[in-house]
Image 1 (cartoon, rainbow, N blue to C red):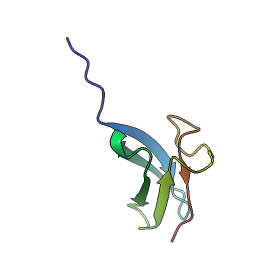
Image 2: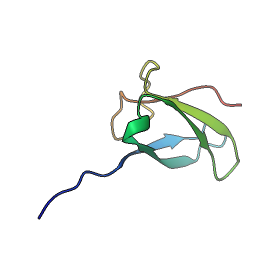
Image 3: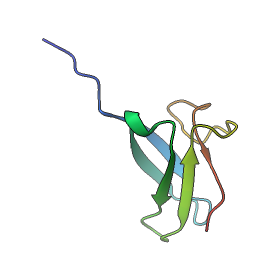
Image 4: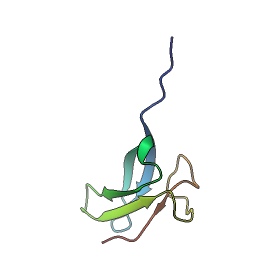
Length: 71
């Protein structure tokens, strides 16, 4: 049986506005890009970036992502 790696990294991010925990799937080819995340509860926009200083927002890999300022 061949094991195929998942096509994306699953991270859990807390919304800066309403504190809802969001499950975010980021394709591996986009891990070094800034990704826009929209909260399904309050529609707040946040930005994930692997290039920013780590703040522990991605629970799978605490030093991988940081949530930047909201709009």
